[in-house]
Image (tube, rainbow, N blue to C red):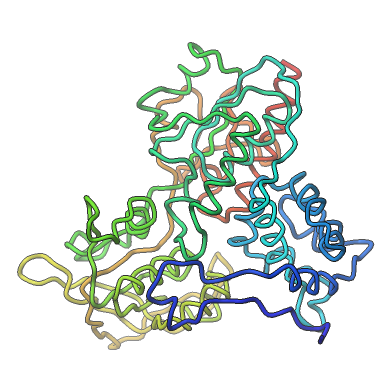
Length: 461
């Protein structure tokens, strides 16, 4: 075995997977996982842990994988990570733990994410449960939303002994994990729902179909329902658009709507009560992970799919793995390209997208080189669907119905970076509701930090 290279991971063939919603990555076998674990140098000062937002003791769990003690490896991971099967699949390890791995200096980093996934999948297959023998302390905490920040916060709070209730607006729990990430990246029944079942086993309660801000307000939860503290982990679900001509045409979707209808409502099924439009040619505007998810979903629904991104390929914000998979499956990348108008037919339906070519100038405030329009470069891409994937911001419903809750100019809730404490006493917040759209693991880190903040607050109240 070449110790400088990762043990190859099994994947569906691109030509096959481009026509199904089954998971692309098939994971390691027991033997492959143990072999990959031997590549870990077990550094005394593990930089990989510094790169992990939830500080999983990575060398310790990998050592147990190398020994074949997968039960102990799961226990070690579970001390810090509430959702290891999910993080092993969707975290950007290449820029976090694996990006800090010493092995990566002269070769390929250890496949930390794939090993975490293996351990978590093994534990779920064997029906392993997290320890939860914590005495109740008699205090109640409400958690708003059931995405990664909320699930992480709830999991830690119940360990402290709190009576924790999650309030979820939709008819199923999981938040963006359920409605935002496609099945081929994150299986719902075998992964998301099983992870949530573990939290229920620990004692977390979930109330579905409860829109906080309409069904009940945070003020009512605290003043009338007897909750001692509240955590807001409602995410950032309000999509952004470009404001160009034709954006209101039939056949223009936000990536949020498109993915929610596909992932949660199964609208790709022709027998669905609300079947989704199946387009012949699709333009997805944007270059992040959500854009890749939307593009790869549209591809599986039979479309020729173009990613339209105004900067160069090197600056695509999506994970390299997702870009690689999209290319393998046949997604076309129109880089250094920017839409200026969505064209419509006489019935108001999309029949093309007018674009201009771009070149890169000096860096802007984000540190990336600013795209500049090339004069006279207009051209049209023939499409019958456009999906806008330009980011999201928090829905203002909660902030507008809660007394004393301050938001900033990006409509994000103002909260302490460490404790999650907001401007309203007893109300904490974290994840995308505070930062705007970010990664699953960063949201989980914020949820865990807020759990500590809530515990300290209630202990000193």
